Image (cartoon, rainbow, N blue to C red; front, top):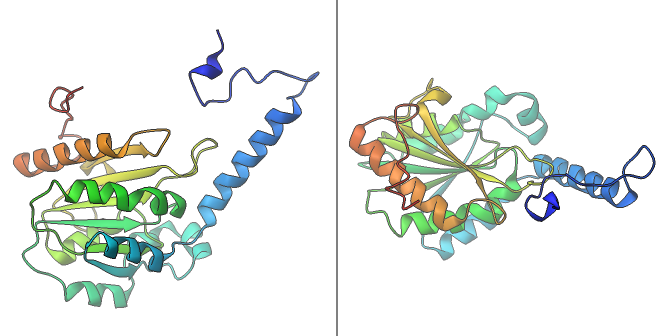
Length: 236
């Protein structure tokens, strides 16, 4: 049985002497280049803003303390906090919001451009919570959502972010949910939905999972290892 009929993983590649066939080697080199390009690709904030406007979704543009992509890749800590101007701009938006959504480039702006707005549109169309304007963050990592949620005073923050590219998935989107966000939260206090892309988890399935986790998080007033996904509730 050909395993390649059932998985995109690099199996059953064949061989040419002691090496790979030329086609398999070239495919590997292409995938490696695509992964590198995804990591270094900058976020097109204007394009993302236009897509949100088309969906009538309010937004605010922010930036982390990392001034450029090179610094961002070398200094993960700077990607976890807002720069001074962004924090001031965000402070002016604080209101009686219950939840906030953040779109951050992470390690694949390609994933964000392909999947963030379509997924967000599906979730917001089924959500009746008071939602803050969506925060678009350049050079942002997952934990920057903690500061954003703390400044806005929301009960829940959801971060849509480009995941670290793999050799078969340069455009995978991840979603991280944190109850009572504040600076210093750990990954154990978050829930993650991963591999959102055409070849992975669909928008519909990801939206269903996220809505379930959001409602359960609000009901139980927690997130992370204490918040379990109920497959029966998801219709699995």
